[in-house]
Length: 252
Ligand SMILES: Nc1nc2c(ncn2[C@@H]2O[C@H](COP(=O)(O)OP(=O)(O)OP(=O)(O)O)[C@@H](O)[C@H]2O)c(=O)[nH]1
Ligand SMILES: [Zn+2]
Ligand SMILES: [Zn+2]
Ligand SMILES: [Zn+2]
Image 1 (cartoon, rainbow, N blue to C red):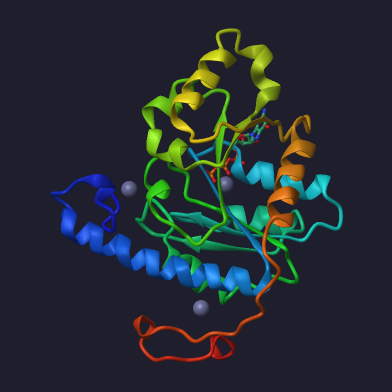
Image 2: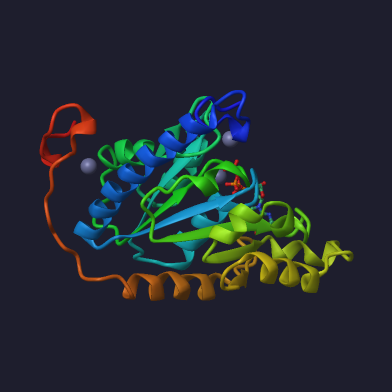
């Protein structure tokens, strides 16, 4: 159980405390956004259930984009497995180990940003902790929210986890290569559930195994990146919540 959000249990984390945590997170997320704006980097918050195929998607994306300028941060309760997989796929990546926390927050991402050499990347994908609930309520400073939903999870997931899908700019329906083995899967039911939850329905059917959908996903990323304003290049100081004000260049 996460002792930051208490997974919505007001007996564990009071409503007041939770609101103040979210307010602090929003401030930090705005600061992260300044980092991304300074370097003109597209930051994507990639969310989804455990095992929905988030890391496999990034590995396949790197394979499909020779000369890519992707970097990644990966959040997990324990292990550096995803970081190792991503680095092996040629993506500069760092793992954020959250311990008991069921989600990433803006502070964890900020800390990791100062410890990851982005190596000239123009896109940073933050693979959130596998969880269809809590990551949706923590702004990380991202420009876009993407949810990976695999074909074996059930067509009704958007209706059961509406907060996540309400936040999504894009849903990636992953593992579509398995559909021939799932005769009961109903795409129309999923599309109906997305229409009831997403502000603007956008879904790409994708397989990290067959490569289906990867060109469309890569084109989506490129369009989002092209829509960013030019880099501000602006250096800025940390706010008082960091303890002492200091230039970013002096971070360790
Ligand atoms: N058939 C098939 N299997 C896939 C696909 N993508 C991922 N998998 C399998 O699904 C399992 C989970 O994939 P991961 O990429 O580790 O999933 P994840 O969302 O990163 O998992 P966590 O980080 O632990 O939440 C692995 O066994 C993958 O091989 C796919 O497109 N097709
Ligand atoms: Zn939680
Ligand atoms: Zn993963
Ligand atoms: Zn900073």
